[in-house]
Length: 461
Image 1: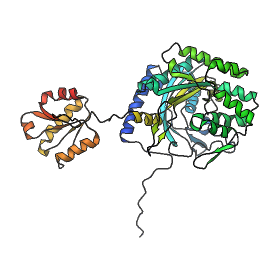
Image 2: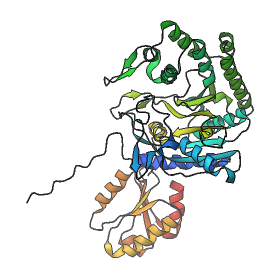
Image 3: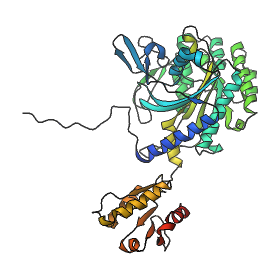
């Protein structure tokens, strides 16, 4: 009889596990983001990870022969189902389905994993978490867009970033669309052009130029077909996206649609000037957003520092929060017409970035209660219960057969700051010894009465 073969423990390409300090930091960031969103009046919404395919739409792929090839789709009896690729498509469906019961403007936040059937590499995954804030309703667009920009800045500050560590780049999609119409770009080329421009920060001017013309081969050898523009058309686009000032932009623009986009941007900046975060926002015309449903103002938030990958190489982090105005996404559903604006934080990328500058040990306030003799287990549990009742992160060592040296080695590996030691002398005298594990002081440990234990620990944390 053939022996059973052992399974190989592995993940499918494009997916990863998260654990330990990285996951603890992620949970902390999720809490901080949620607190900020609630402060701005947003309410939570949870939708399933899977939707009817026709409700999801085909906004990611420009392959007309296989428009849903960038998403994970399944057949279930008579329905075609698709895993969500973002949080906006489910929101549009939810509003169209429940608008009679909602209070408008409807300000909702939501977070969860999204799924994209992309070619995975070191920096691109097929599943990652997004945290969204959106405002749905026929309201003053500049005010709603300004609220989204403000919440991005406030959220990033709440998570510990300083003013010089991030910038919110804003643009308006109508500006580039007006130019494309003037220089006779057809509909099929327009999608490729906008996606090319959106990659300027990552690929540089030459990379975008290649995508606007014949195409580009990446480091893996994969070829992306270009938009096949002429040199004149290419130069017009590249010249536009280099402009950094609205006044210079107005001098260069003649298109009615582009001028409409400039006016919307000016109104956005007027609103931002009434708040606290105008200095966190700047004009950047290469921000056009790759998804076709964006219709006006749009934004991307970039970090102003580099990070190191697993191989120790410096890499650009890219955008950690992006979004924009979409006035036709919900209109796709029968009988419903609401405008929308919003943003999405790429939580996993954001956590990766914050982990680069936040070197503090998340276990640095942890305490280990050593077990020196099994006959004193009742006393050790009294101590650890007392610590936990006072909201002090603490563990009791789980193997009394290990000696003190091995128990302290465990505390060191976990990054704990203190250990509580109670031998026969401490037990007899109702005392406890506190050992400072990371201290270089000569007095690394001292003994205190048990009734003073909590106060002494709090002095050290």
